[in-house]
Image (spheres, rainbow over the protein chains, first blue to last red):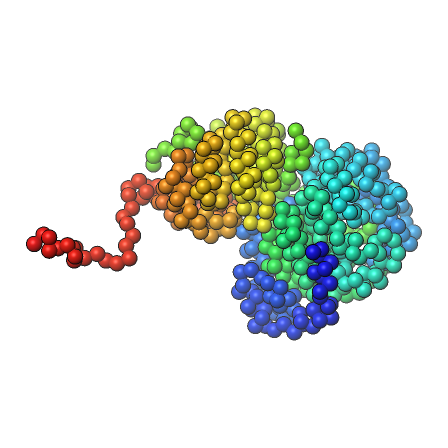
Length: 372
Length: 256
């Protein structure tokens, strides 16, 4: 049964009502349970749990240290192209936005990658928009093959594919995928994606399954926070992760918390997620999913990232640039969104160490997927 | 303490230490030093095995410690074998802690792929230390093909729950023809002592040291736990009884 069949059994309004109706005693029971079930997860996402942020954070911290130790995996995004034929209303790369468009050549990609390699990064995330004529699988695979010798782990955050497409990128050396559903609410999804291939909610929802089946080792999911209401989106993110863990039990999972940032086009979040709700969401997901990586990008402020780190975060980016060519050319024009934490990689690594954690630059090896 | 002989090599410590999850390399070294260990295991995925300046490898004095590379992250036999060969090609001694853990959630070992990988590696001349579930039959099968130890888990990795598989480990120890290393799940020196009292030859500890407030002090505490457990085992523990035993209530008449 695909995840679509599972999520389709939920009525979003009824789910929201159930979450809103949870009481303090249900939150307390959830906090005393070793393995959360969905009803308890709902309690931790409820308004009633807002009074329990400290015990939730304490437990999230303990679980994370036990499972992941005192380490934070460092990664960096590399934007290959900002060409896009989609009309996502919230995104800076939206085809309707007049901005400098660029698709890096292989040599330009290598120049960017060398900057990140020199900074110490060995886990790389390649990012594109969706422009099949300009940045397709052939282009992506050529970039991966070119960069593979420099990096331990290569992930992609690009357009969704079917199983055949993912198998191609796996062969070229990709081991990880990040793909946000943006919103798990089909009606809102349709509203936010007025045109382009991305309009197809089901195809995007099925992509993580296709990727896992094609042999991608690490899969990151998430909802774009600010679109749908965070309690429902958080619930469905958790449900999605549990589904993938059950059906693709060899796959490492991660959840990201992309909170909307100012982007070209000036879209305002429909349901802004304030810091308190953000913390509640992170802790609730950690308690539901003790073994899943939790990712915090430079979208958030330096101060907030410093405070979120011990709550369950296991992966962080640093010194990121969200425009193609931006690392080598120090140029932010054509960026997807404005980052907030603008400290460089050294400053972030020093902050991690000051908090008693080891920044880990390498936690994978090309030998896993390259044959002798 | 009596020496430990592993694959024909003599060690004075019966505590092996893992190097993952530490808050810094300094904390890792402090735990290693205080624990008195002579064997440290390193995940090949975490290091540039070809690079002596690698931040973890540079902190491990190879004169003092036997570096035991492990294949953590391998999902099947093929990957594990490839990683082991990589370490040997980089100049490591041919020792390998074989870990095939396709399930990233509990990191439980895959018995089928572990067995396949062990067969290949033993044939290639590796000294193989396989991480296994506490399955006595699998332990015997692995011993038959020539592994150097068996390493049954006490509880899933990182759980600190202690010897949850105690009954099965007791059978493995009873039947073993190679040293038994209890690996994974030991969260306190008392757990390590318990394993050693049962007759385990040594134990491997990582998370309990790495996440301790003071990893050095915890390393020292585990050293004592292991030594106490071994000494108690050698001294011969008294039998546990459910009731106090009167002198000869049923057969006393024979002595009258």
